[in-house]
Length: 518
Image (cartoon, rainbow, N blue to C red; front, side, top):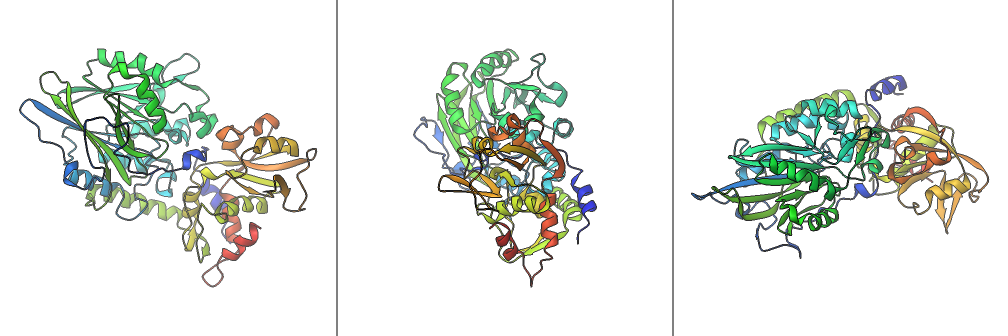
């Protein structure tokens, strides 16, 4: 039996953060390099590993600035699949895009950089910062999950970053100032081959709903267009000849924004949050989506007149992190952090013959079922967006559980009547993992009794603190403002339940999980 105290101590080094909303967990991942709104600018083919993706030659009176854009990296420095990690991405940029750190390049991230697999989450993003520093990133915007480990951790990360973290629309509620104390700046000026470039950041206005609201309670998140109308003139006055925006906005939001700020002569807006992958133009503004998990990227090449510093031509497209020669320096960084993670987290707690997919009922059911098995309550709920990885066949380690449940939540016990619970869950029947009751024929049925949820009876319901604080728009706190913080890390009951089954190769956990979720 695994020592619970040891696990508790190990888990407690993480600080509270939050789960991702269900909508945020969807990955579009389509190569949308060509689309109906594309203008007549020269376009790449969107496959990254063909000759058309190489930068065009500079003429005597022209120069080229190339932007490489990723987003939603989510700590996948190793890559979701072998050969598609950070080291390979640098190799692709070097081989296919002629990238050099001291060349006419800018490398940006659309945010959500470090919450993900254990190699990053366990170290609160420190490992990912080192990898991105070595990749040569020039700026990033603040994603909702970059707040996941709390403000002190974010402040520590920005102090380690060799590139600025930007968000011009985040202000302190108290006085309207920027959160400079956290290292977040509204914009940044940089010269590329003598061309002054202004880089402005935009955070999502949905951030309080898709990170733990407690972590961002001191901030307001301003309107995108209004923010740019205020800040772009400042950037121009600072000398910018090119203006680019890095944001954590989905594509639909970017298109609306580009229509709204056409008069500002912005050269490019990059997005994030929805894991979309595309390159297009609208109103002469380049729109880029960098994909996710370091598996792909987008690019834009701007040809400028050397004398006027005005853009005279553009080439845009998307690239794939595939077949890249792994950079040795990045590989060594990844290997070092992998060894640290394995040393701390390579503790086997179970064995599965078939594995469990986060998209199927077994894995979500395992999580909330284990909560009920380990804590006295009637019902357990967690949002599906907080479940981030599959469990593959073979040994199940603590590191696997951290990867599946990367957010540092704790369990809150709330007391709600059946009528209140029905109001909270209205329209949410399929977007959450539920144990203790099920939705059948338009009604919530209690698993233990087979009876309909009683409007008058009070039930003890377990939720994670992200949901209790209002994440995903939940209203548990409105009905029970004195919800009991159990102090239990949401992973701990899962680890304890798995350990108690004493599974192994000859006695896999699969059947026990099936019994748990019935």
